[in-house]
Amino acid sequence: MIDPMFEIIGLLAAFLTTSAFIPQVYKIYKEKKADGISLTMYVILFIGVLLWLIYGILIGSLSIIIANGITSLLQLSIIIFKLKNS
Amino acid sequence: MIDPMFEIIGLLAAFLTTSAFIPQVYKIYKEKKADGISLTMYVILFIGVLLWLIYGILIGSLSIIIANGITSLLQLSIIIFKLKNS
Image (cartoon, rainbow over all chains, first blue to last red; front, side, top):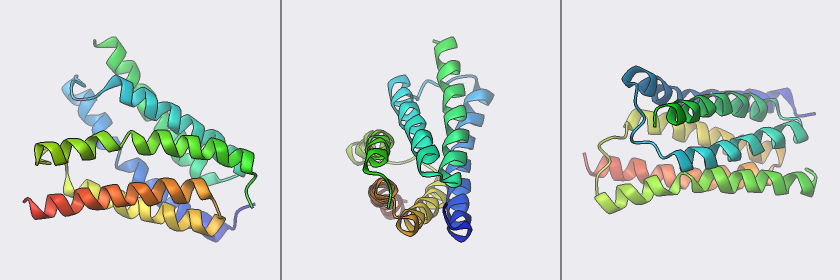
């Protein structure tokens, strides 16, 4: 069990690094294109984020689970968009 | 102390998500420009990554410390580059 005080720092970290990713998703949906984005890189990132999610579950870290749970969904939506529009 | 078996998954996650970030740093240095990059976003991300680093130290997670240690240095180099070239 991780100290709840530590989780506050982790959750703040999760909020900052996850929300920084949202404008890109918004931009892709608004402009209806994702030309500048490499599919390979997103797939590698997606696998990495899924592994972080598994790691978070294994060590019982709420911050890692929340951050990588949300990020994996955002990245999956970009991958699906990219596959449908190419 | 985190199970070393769990750390293998975490380190693999760290490798995938950190290395995905390297091509962008390389592109910026090669093209000598970072026009498409928002300084505000990078500063927010940088603070978030520093908080992840502190969180990793607090919970004793080698994977989080390594991933966010390297990422914070990469992001700091982009921020310095951006400040010097704008």
